[in-house]
Length: 167
Image 1 (tube, rainbow, N blue to C red):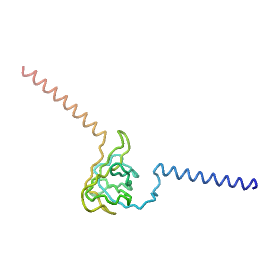
Image 2 (image 1 turned 180 degrees about the vertical axis):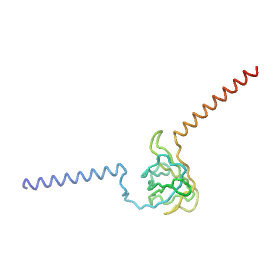
Image 3 (image 1 turned 90 degrees about the vertical axis):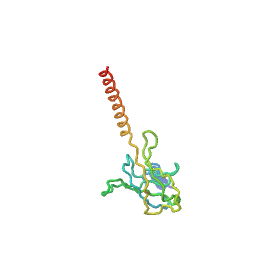
Image 4 (image 1 turned 45 degrees about the vertical axis):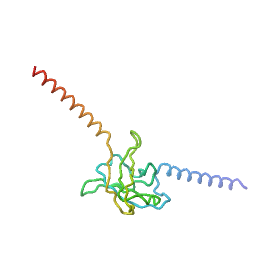
């Protein structure tokens, strides 16, 4: 084998390895839209989706069964409409199931968890999940806690000044 053919073979091998690394990076980072599985879409409307992003996981009992395909705002009722792309292997989710937006850990990313219901019919392409639970926003909870603590302090101060004025 000549010098030229060895260089060509090495160059081809390096290009093949780089293509494999790029493909692996897309798979690991979940940036690819190719899933290699047959899927179907269902939708759900939420009052507040928090920091939910497209491609966030959709789980049932902690097992990933799909991902968020699209997020839009309904112009009529001003609720977030989330399109869930579910794997065909998860084709036995009852129609009365509920969808909740949860957080992975204390400060982790949001995902959707489906809690199966008890109906005999199953979700199919184009269906909508009617029972939803919005994301819990940590900042709102802290604000409510601070407001209630401040309210309790002012109530205690008011009652102590009322007791002092009565004596």
